[in-house]
Image 1 (cartoon, rainbow, N blue to C red):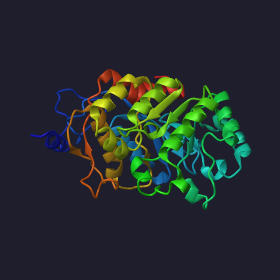
Image 2 (cartoon, rainbow, N blue to C red):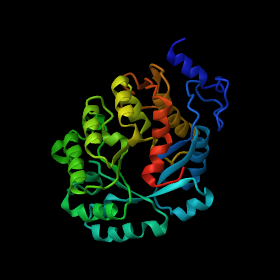
Image 3 (cartoon, helix red, strand yellow):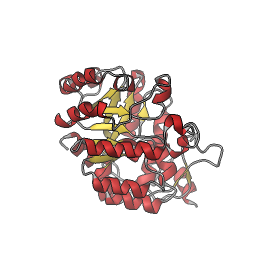
Image 4 (tube, rainbow, N blue to C red):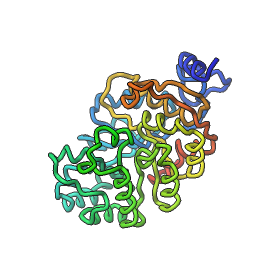
Length: 338
């Protein structure tokens, strides 16, 4: 039986390893053998009615806590329903940061702790040029944003930063570099921000937008250079697609920097379909803890649907590394007790 057949067959069975995990894993792949807790360090609540589904699915896959970016909701509302489960991130939208309202955002930064927020979230992506009607978008290293990032640093508030998008986007929707810039420039701007605001604790989403094999050496350099830089593994299809292309190099990097990598899915509560959430948890767990080969991604990947699809090649990370990525690193970054 191939690795792919073995994994897919396991989706219909309970784990057969002889030990019981501390949470229900019925119906999951028998390649998933890690038995510790998971902290999903990157989720979003958009439509609150689907939050319970996200929570139930997370529990099924071992998730005990999560960071949630709120869109139109408050920590108080969510905490009443799910006490102690979430760390809350305030989303500072591009509408405000890029629209000349930086000073007004400083008051929101100062009020974060009182309102129940422990983390900030900002989104720097070429698409903001379109959202703002063609206006110029200040890069992340713009002096205009210095006071915002300095306030976060001085108040010891970590910030989740979306740095850039997949290489596939820059090859298609962002081909007009005169409008959207290049990915290399977006990454360089982010590096300049890290230099401009030393000591700022940054969780760079999506492996700092560098899971592609060509970027892994550069990501290695960045993590070695900036001790306050962390990355998360959010976007299951992006991570699975790119890290699986060179599992040896990906495994080496994650082990070397295992103290500054956080597990995250980027699940967004916009779907009533359980398979949306299940597919992302399953894909990432297969990627990180199994040694499967050429397993189809359990949900569509628009970037590869016309050229053969996306397949998972597991990295087989040791449990000591998974303990950090899945749980301990998030506790440390967010200042939580175990």
